[in-house]
Image (cartoon, rainbow, N blue to C red; front, side):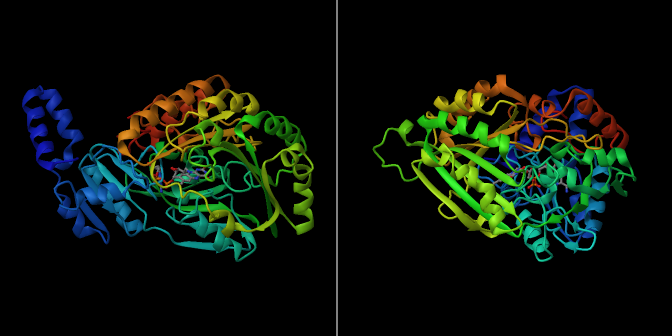
Length: 491
Ligand SMILES: Cc1cc2nc3c(=O)[nH]c(=O)nc-3n(C[C@H](O)[C@H](O)[C@H](O)COP(=O)(O)OP(=O)(O)OC[C@H]3O[C@@H](n4cnc5c(N)ncnc54)[C@H](O)[C@@H]3O)c2cc1C
């Protein structure tokens, strides 16, 4: 638990034990200890919370969506209410040598917006939007939630490959790559659907980045995610014709019957329409009797959604699944269920996903081998809430005008979920073993969902070597004084 007095004592001790050079460096990195944050508060519509504020710890904890709050302590938390607030905050931070970290909705599992020292700039109130139906564009502020964009665009018969969780903000999501609903048919990773963005740069200037304006900044914004060096205040996103019909089927197999699932899927993937999205989960059967041995309670769930023009077309897209062993050998199935985005966002009887949370991901070109390699290990999860999610058949397009540069045919995400802090070590150890097992099949990781808090090198492994270097060059151009934090652990 954070105690101000201890921190101050520690600060004074460090000053007296460091040499002159070290003292200067420490003072620079802890500038806010002396920074008159009060003067900033008078210039903002929003809120400024410093470390000696009694509400500091409540604010700090609220910055991270999940329950496990990293032990990192920004010197100032600034909650902006407007773009003008953001410009004031960036100028203030630069003048007082407070390194900036940005938060849209705080969903990043590694807690990338929570850093030691500096300013945490919370822009979660910037949620305005405008839909330009004629041009099929959404103009959104970055803290708008994914579900709201889908809902608002839907009013005009349009949609967006938004995140599968309703409350994830578009900011961190689209900047980092993004695997969303119906992604394969809608341009692949949603970062490719950014058409332009307004960015407040390190010198407090507002610049527009697009394919024709500051194209290097545009390139960096499309994929840098938690390593981006500017505050994105507006996103111009391409919208797509919404499906008129969404129909879903689901199949459950015992995990011991995985071979049937993978063999069938390998064949179905060859025929699959790109508007069919499959999500395969390794999970604990919530209906398993309590006395059933853990490993027998593990199941493989396959959900299939068809995003179609008509009911008939959707059913046609799902028929190969219904006619396969995925259906005939399942222990439970529900087929051809009418659905919509509201149902997809709020499924019944599904774990809300809220708790202590850790995640890591792999792009792979060998789905079956990866899943078989990790299946036995999954039977030993320390928490029955943990699950592995595979999204087969990604749209693997990469673009020269986006730094997003790692993808594989399939996505595998390991989502740790548990409740009690005393179980942290066993859960992280299990995740690390999962990563070790999956490593031989990995083409890299997804920057928005990787355990960079414990393994900072993983951020580099989210990019091609060329784009990782390119990103550092563009960073130097737009943020030479390092006003913004880089990737967690890579500062
Ligand atoms: C329950 C849940 C479900 C999820 N589902 C999906 C999913 O379906 N598909 C998917 O791809 N991902 C998904 N994610 C992962 C999600 O994309 C990342 O967690 C992402 O970082 C969240 O964005 P955020 O803005 O909320 O994060 P924050 O924690 O607020 O920010 C993360 C980082 O993004 C950067 N950032 C955020 N906003 C800005 C901005 N305006 N300007 C500049 N930099 C900014 C900052 O560096 C910040 O450190 C999910 C996460 C959770 C917790």
